Image (tube, each protein chain N blue to C red):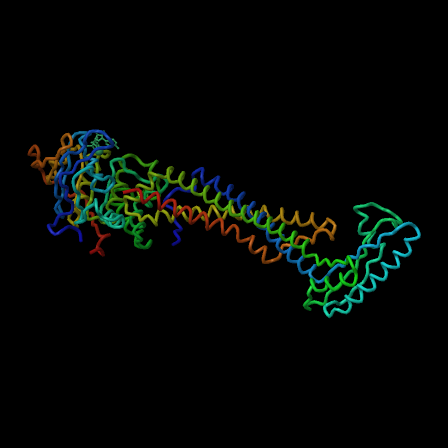
Length: 302
Length: 252
Ligand SMILES: Nc1ncnc2c1ncn2[C@@H]1O[C@H](COP(=O)(O)OP(=O)(O)OP(=O)(O)O)[C@@H](O)[C@H]1O
Ligand SMILES: [Mg+2]
């Protein structure tokens, strides 16, 4: 039921002036937290699909014993790599298997170990990059067993462990952010209850008169509820208005980072829709809470 | 149903009332208001007139005794029933209790709006009634800028706009001159002729005697019925105005 007229002078009290600001702040925080969960979720999904199509095979280098042993070891390693490649390429699920050159391995390690120039002495593992055919079933355990049989020490890394840890991290973040959103919801409810109680006290006299005139509880509660809804929507929209530039700013900053480290933060259209729903959620929470509070307090009147 | 089987709008049986832990303000009050009766309630200041009316408009519960309104026992009635009963009771509060932020028009319209009457029907009735109480030029004025007597008339208009079955007025002529007082009393009589049971609490014994209706007197919380006119003064007052309470014609 929508009452357009207000018999209660709700617009004039101090509560009505401060409530929209609080709700704006709550909605602002809630939108940031919600945006965080949405973006992280999308990121994790993309990492997941990106990593699933590849494997890395690691072959430990043969121990080099002295300068003379060096050549022999290199030859043995080359043989191992060849054997491994043969096994890998024989698997129907494998699209491509290429050894990663020593230079490339060094380049990968450079950020951590620094430029080592010709680091022949370092016992670097040999790596084989394996690309899988999309959709083809692959028994990683069997493959690694076969490899280890032919090439002792060879290990298959399907990034699962790393991915698992990453996803667990993302999940934790998501859960935290969701908890924050829920807490904000409760804080909003508490604020509206407080504001409504104050409003009830301020307008006690008017409420009593309406009551004696024969107003139903729903008539009085409806006015408080509509008023709270208007304030909630006002505050919520303002919060959204503040959150949009913040999100766009964060997204722009993230884009300036190294592309390889972070997939760019993109807020999908459906995510924008969810974020835009927050002011409506705030308005609804305010409305329902105010109605409940007033109805409860009125039910104590004779 | 406007009254119970015995044609009784309000019945008090051994009603007692105390505020908090104080002494009893009303003691063993028993009364029956016959449907269509016109009653004065007199008594010195602090005798408990307002308190008795508060019980009648369900602002208070008695501390003891039983109150029956329109055949409903108040103590056991459901809240929803009470709302229905309240709509049949019109009250002129001693302190007016007008809503400061609303115009005289909106104040008077309030009981109709609360009851869900259509806005188109409200307008005509409210203007007619406010014109009759002499406030045609103050439709848009808010109570704080009205004089005491003007506020009182807005309060009376608000109490009778919805044609209550029981009309309670607490000192409704305290702030107006005798001419206006008489005019307002005739308005109450008009309402009474249209079927309302009326109770008017007042100090003004001259007025009571002049109009000559049944009269109750509260003395230290106890109720007696007294003969009117109290001092034999009775004169047929000239009709103060041709007020036609036509706003309620569609009713009943
Ligand atoms: N809310 C209250 N709390 C405590 N005592 C009250 C309250 N209202 C009234 N009283 C007491 O009850 C007694 C009767 O008061 P009431 O207002 O009914 O008198 P009254 O006959 O209407 O007086 P007046 O003619 O001055 O309006 C008084 O002694 C008053 O002090
Ligand atoms: Mg009084």
